[in-house]
Each structure stands twice: as structure tokens, then as C-alpha cells.
Image 1 (cartoon, one colour):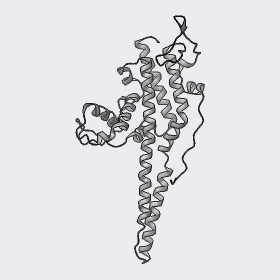
Image 2: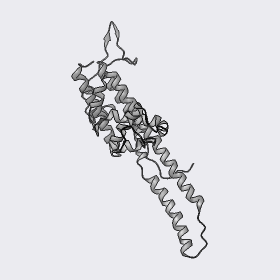
Image 3: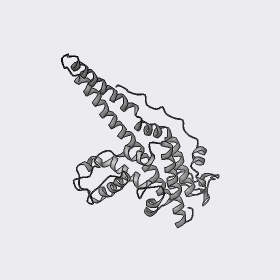
Image 4: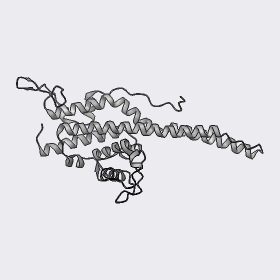
Length: 265
């Protein structure tokens, strides 16, 4: 298999304290002791040993997930926005065109190198598919992790929808859920001339996040494509550290809203 430009290398796993401090996760600044209940060690709903309380344990789990997945997610994310692949492909296309034009200008028989042209186009298509897969993987991971955290701290749908940051009126959680739905179902959406209510709900969020027009009933939509790369660009500006900041700003805010309604679990 031909490899064009060298992809970014895996980074090291960031430390637990590093993640907690740079994202100002106050709940995890202090120690988390084991909890005893009814003469035995308490467990979380997932069967892990509970540390301090439900909220502390939920946030600890989220941070551990983030930091252990950090090298892979960062690599996938940065590869999506690595322009070296596209630049090399375009250079190959240009070389084919220039060679054919040179033959014409010098009176030589016009004999275009179609095999080289098709090879460059095939590689471009392959890279587009790869970037969609990489971006989709990042999106699914984020959506799953944030959804689990929401469930663990018992946050409501209203809290999920209003926690900052927001993008064109929709929370990070909502945008990622809509994008994850696109990753899983965009092949179905391609054939949905008139989207159903569930499809349309996700499409409206994506249309807002991407500043893309959408008919009231969703007719003639363009969301049968893979939008994960575009959404990651829109919410992070192709900066992985900005994406991390948004993730933990959202979870901090989600927990704050939950605590306003209900004291720490």
C-alpha cells in the first residue's frame, strides 16, 4: 500500500494531574477516598470501586478515558487536518497536466498519461474516505464518553442542551450527538428524500453548526455525506487542544447545572 506524506506520530499519554489542572476540574483537585456502605466497599453503577462519591467517580472515569485515548484520538484528529496528503496529490495531478501540455506545445503527439491521472484521483478519494473514518472515530468516542458521563451524574436533557459552550445555539453535547448520528446513518440519510423526525432533528443541529441552509421539512438536504471532518473543524478550528478545552468546559458546566438542581451525588 502506497503511503504519501508521513502521518503525525503518536504522542505520549498525558498525566492524570496534568489533565485535571489544565482543565480546572475542581472536583478532582482533592483526594478521593474509598467509600464504605453497609459494612462493605461501595461500588459505582458500573461496578468500579467508588471514590468519594458518585460525581467524583464519574469524573475520574471520564478523565482516565480521555488521557488513555489521548494519543490515538490526537493522531486521528491531526491526520484529518494534515494538508500534506492533499498537497502531494495535487502536485501529482499538476505534474501529469504539465507533461501533457508540454507535449502539445512542442508539437509532440498528444498522449495523456491517463493511468497516472486516475491513480492520483483514486488516492485523493481514498484519503477523503480515510479522513471521514478518522473524524468519525473521534466523534463517536467523544459522544460515547460524554454520554456516559451525563448518565453517571444523572444530568437531564435540559442540562445537556444548555451547558456551555454552544455552537449556533446548540451545546457541544448536542452537536456531537447529531454528528455521531450522521456517522452511523448517513447512508440511510442519502435516500431520505423527506427525512423522518429523528433524522431531521439531527440535521437541524448540523445545519446550524455548519451554517448550512436546510428546508423546514428537510427536503433536498445534503447530509447524506460524512460531515464529521467539517463539524470537528467548526467546533475546534482544527486545534486538538481547543477541542479538549471545549470537552471539559462542557463537562464542568454540565456538572454545575446538575448541582444547581440537585446536590452532589
